[in-house]
Image (cartoon, rainbow, N blue to C red; front, side, top):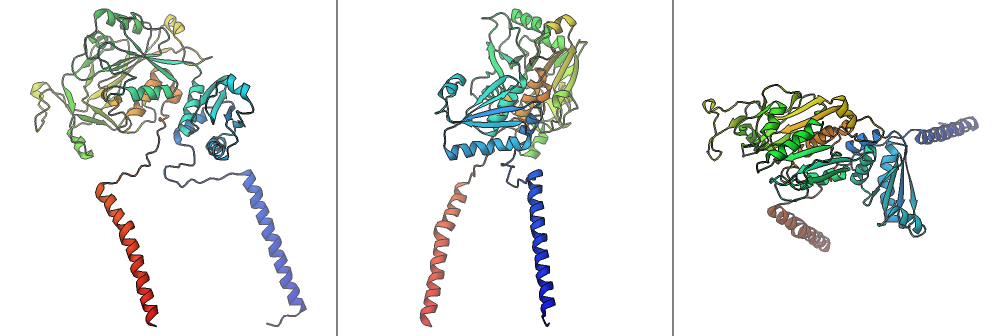
Length: 465
């Protein structure tokens, strides 16, 4: 091709047009990047974006949240906190943050009670919460406490061998009590023999599997509390009701004899048939959006019997292969025997009961948040098992989520139902001794030996040339 002056000019014009078009497109892309934000998190477990639970909590915010970070001029600490807070700011622009060096503002540090470098102060609707560890779990739980506004109190009855919300024994509920504290719910204990009155500010009373018979006077105090519109969570293990039969009669419920067994649990690798699984849930407010399998060891079955002022709704039911075993559980092969009065599944493990409060009781009932109307509905949950919330089994399936949902429903805070608890992702790599030895042999012996042999062969070949 012969290039003359005309052709040379055309080539230069084409190059100039390409350059102008390239700069224009680059400028438009830069402008669009300032107007629209698109993010993609391809990490395992979406570690760089907010979890679903955090997004649900942030969606409930109806006004700005001001976050003050008290951190010294240390780049690593500030960058880590800033990276965590930017996740909330990207999702909701009403979240604002500012950094204060505690060394330059000692008066403000003392007034706010700041004790840790990197501590956060969250302010919302005139209330404030402090977070000492700037991670997603701490920040989201603090936001949830701010959204509640008012105080929620769970009172656990004690003195009859009940599960404790403070102790860390396998059968106790210390881990569940800790989760309640993180959610801003006060979990306290009450011995009616020492304090013969249930506090009026009780959001819900908890009967956590009593093992000793309650005295008639204690039962009357509980009935008085219920007659005044109090909410109740009753965890009843298989066996005797230990003097609480009047409550069953009041609720129109009956405790079936025996322990529920479910041989289909073996399909999921569970060799103990007394571990009962619940996989489906009814469309009840306490179960809204809940679909995680839950596990109930040594559970008892319940059924309705007689009239009651409450409206009972089954919320937890077994699979159809389960039955109530009234014989010895030590037998090698358990079989259903209708002649012994055993009941075939599906069986109900849990009931949710509700009734409207009389006008006088509703007016006297405390509300769960400030500037909200008092609750007009009394709520009761009766579960035929307490082990599912015990420390040993709380982490199984959706047991913790179910417990939190029940408490939110009982304390009239339906906004937080189906917001799962935030738990730390287990990133530990657990290897068997054989796997550890194999990896050590490959990386510490075989690979170095392979490199050495390869180098020796190459050196030997080059030397022969």
